[in-house]
Picture 1 (cartoon, rainbow, N blue to C red):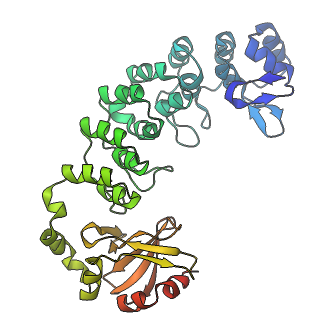
Picture 2 (tube, rainbow, N blue to C red; picture 1 turned 90 degrees about the vertical axis):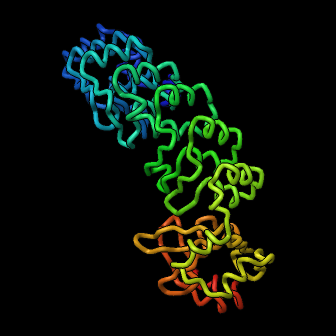
Picture 3 (cartoon, one colour; picture 1 turned 180 degrees about the horizontal axis):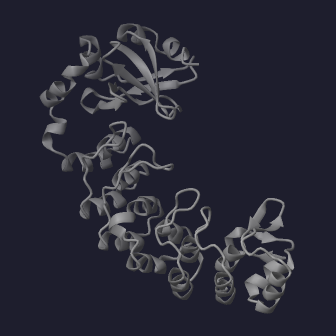
Length: 353
């Protein structure tokens, strides 16, 4: 049985693996003389194979790391760059060594993880300052790792990023957050008021919206957390919650009078027992959310649509109809005129299937 940290535990492994992780340089020399390719991955199980340098770094065996590097091992493999492995698994001695011998400090792996993210994955928080000091700076590269770290609630780590000048409003899209949220929006989505307050105290902007127009206040309304919603409301410009200002904002949408009256009413939640959607709840007029789908303007009307979290009922001013926006696939499905929708919500929604 052999345990290779988070790579897994294996019933057995080739002798070469044991030699690498134990620093048996004599055995490595013998293997090299026998024609061993030091960059060739070593098969440990049916679905697991790792390069010799990867194994040495994961198990923090500096003698093997040095020997492999001296014999020409690739330090900047596209899938698993050495610097990322070093900051995730090893200490400063190993990190300094690979950097001194040409490891790219700005490297990304096959899933676009950078050094800061790698250190966080490995819980090697002591390596964060080292990464920054080596030139992969927080100001330029730290935003993604900072945003990802919000859900871990490790305030010491967040303090590190903030103290070193991270963009606290970082909102570039990636595979985890394609909808362009700021760290504050992420905290709001996790209904973490304490984290929201922490971010605001350090300069987070409450007015920046996500790709679909949602801002922290809107997210709190969607989540039904009225304490959080009130907190954000008090931080926002007063005009955001002024009726006349909202009506001016909505003029380009050319809302039917019936729709305006409906959204100003008290009955905005409907059970749909004969529908797969189960229920629908609309946003009050003042809380409707304008956003763009490509170049097309849409107005989000629904707060929630049963358990279909990726579906939103919207007003489409181009077609002058109620439509359904699929956030996951970024598709718009036209439904019907507003009065037709109100008369038979369940029937109209079922046409989506």
